[in-house]
Length: 358
Image (tube, rainbow, N blue to C red; front, side, top):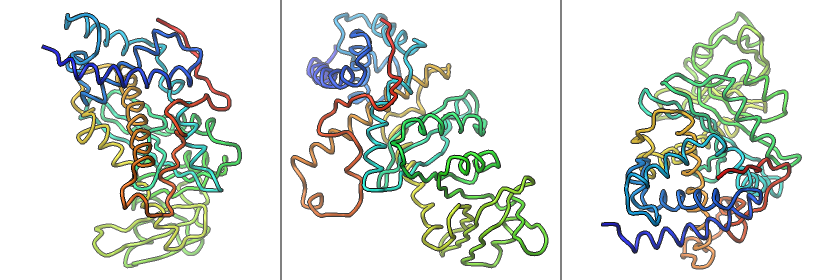
């Protein structure tokens, strides 16, 4: 027996979500907006990637479970349900707000795996101690997603940035490669990229050594104007080995290395709560039974929209009913995430959010 109160709650959420989708995606068919809004509302309520459980709470007219599951499967396999096109208006608004008053837009690049079934590469917008999803790529298997996949996400977000926005990319030591450095240099983006200890470095004095050898025995070390890899990519290195850390941070950057610029890398951890929101502490993505990367990509879109909705709802509540702690100024831009005064968001400059299907 389905809970009518729960379905009523989902229906009410879906109506408000649908209004935002219709305003942000004016060229979408009404049936698409309605279906996507229902799926997002059901995800917020059920917090599950299991299609049977998700279908069970959908406020549909039919009581037949098989037809409910078929409704959801058809939504997840529709190739025209584009995550980049649909999320673009909200991502643009968040990026615009993050860059206000000359603030630097901080992006974190990281990967999470679903066992040995899928790898998900995520580019998130860091906001305080957390992050919002901007772009992602899903591939089958446990392999690390290389520069080709990274470049697709970086180029997508670059097209969404406000003109003249300053950007800093943070990435763990599994990602830096010569191609990534060259891309960041070409587009004038700042970066803090953690390096493995076995990367060859020409420090500009003596022989070529490894990053690990340069860090050995040092608590802190700053090395400007070094070259990495066989291709001799120019960069600066900052090394910091703080108490309680098993290994030092070896951070490549295109700014003067100091303790403060090395510590910028710590903001990368904002993406870890995002993965927790998607997985064990939120929507339990790791429990999905899906087998096709494209369907998982569309499920991630539903989860991403659900996160944006939850953040907006929380900010609205904090604005209208602030706690004593929320009334205190923090100096952090975490409340300015670009969702505006209401959930609906207008398409951003050059929006590609144009699609139509039933």
